[in-house]
Image (cartoon, rainbow, N blue to C red; front, side, top):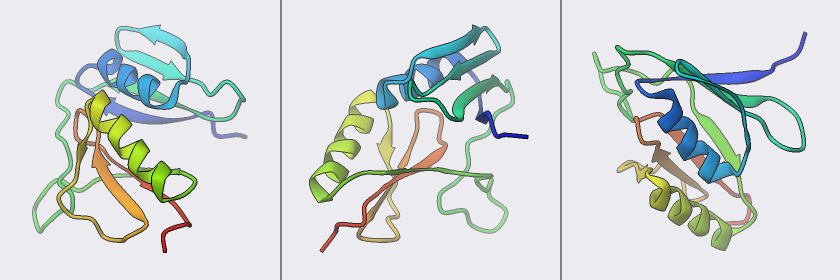
Length: 125
């Protein structure tokens, strides 16, 4: 058995896949109206995007009775400058920086439909 993909629900799978394709540079594998897959060139598990017409974005951080995130993606970058560059690239592609930031070496962002994801580095003084 092997993990082949992490699947994110989206009201428009192609739109969300386009955001992550721009962010990660991964090519599209499957491309169907209700299912899109991105695969890293070097191999390994990719990301897939599945149509969910009733998708409700999570609240970060969630309070009592609010939609909680089910998972989030972590992307490691090399150093403080790379952390800020990754944030700028993601924002330019359509993400937004979350208001709450829990740590100095982590930046929490929300993708265009509200899935939280993080950039982090080991190299923050």
